[in-house]
Amino acid sequence: MHFCFSHRRRLNSKGYLGPIGDDLPSLIPLVFALVIFFSSFYSTVEAYNTKTVDFENDIAVVQVSASLRGTGYVSSLSDFEKTCNALNVRQPLFSSGLIPLEEEIDIFDLDSQYILDAETNNPFKCSNTDKVLTEGKALGANIKIVSRTYPLVLEKNFTDADGKEKTIVIPVKLVVVAWRE
Amino acid sequence: MERIKKQKGQAAITDALFFLVIVMALVSFLFFFTSQYGRSVGEYASSKYASDYATSALKTVLYSSFSRNSDPLESSDEVDFLVAGLKEDYAYDKKIDYFKEDLTLSVKNVMNPVRNAFDYLFFIRVSDGSDVYKFPYFYISRKHFTTEQDEFFVGSVESEEREYYCAVDNQSDIDNFISFVGIQGQAISSIGFPLSKKLTEDEGESFHEGTVQIILWNPKHFEEDNTLFSDLNCIQIT
Image (cartoon, rainbow over all chains, first blue to last red; front, side, top):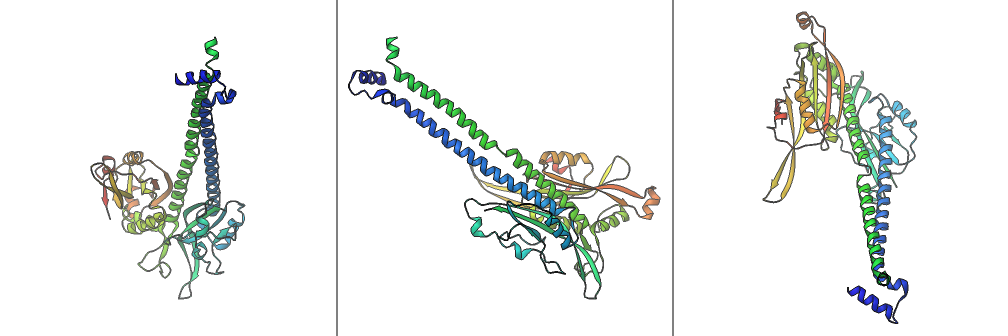
């Protein structure tokens, strides 16, 4: 009632503001609706992109780990490297390798945890980058880190104290850590 | 007609309110889409990981070497595959008792990286040719949750890892229990158990067909007097 009265009064008065000014109260819900719509649309697109990146990381980790696991039996470093070289993953960056089963994983210090080959002293490591994941990077706003662990068996050949050639099969774990910078 | 012409402002605000209602419906749809998007993919990824882990764990347990004497593995003179020890153990008296602790230790080590994420059971099932299965080894590791609670609020939730050996009578008890806890991943492998000469003469069979199975599920709270759990006849070992 109050609105109708003032509306009529404005039409009859010299303070008439024109078509927009006259419908000023109706602009409030319009603008409110547009603001809500575009902000929720933006947040939906953001969530969609974030989840899509997460899925891409997950898929990459699954691919890398499936290839490196193979039959679940790693007979030698050359066998492991052969599988690693067959991988063709550019993004995300990843670092993976074998570490002792009982050791706690430190994703910022993986290079020192990878098992070394007894003959060549090279680590059982497979990676598509020379970059290293650091705590500083991990705290970055846009970084996404995915980590997966699987048990495997590793054949170990060595010479014991009596000079006898021995072969044992030890349980180890395959660690795959992938991230996007 | 004249009166309607003079009420343009009311029509405009009604249109705006309708527009607002339509936008609210769209926004609700967007929020619903956001909350649901990728949910099934995420669940599938989690289930796939559990299955892959179970498969790898089973192979690792069976193919790992173990020391037949108490010496460390690298210095031991008697090293064999664990599965060979299990077959030998079963062949003697149709039980797995001599290498039972070695098997449990191996299973626990292999499952250690995911011990907080999953509860699991590991068992060996053997058929002697009849429809009746026997379970010479049955091990469960689960979390038992305790809550501190006042009149209105739950204070804190603590979990304690509990392990059991079970004397299961039939497969349906396992199936019922698994239906109750909800399976997340599993792996199964067939294995033949040869019998000793003495047993072969008694039974006329040279070996029993068997399977080794591991089943993972997300930790779920239940009391030990739960019928589905008590049907498994479990005895806590820790």
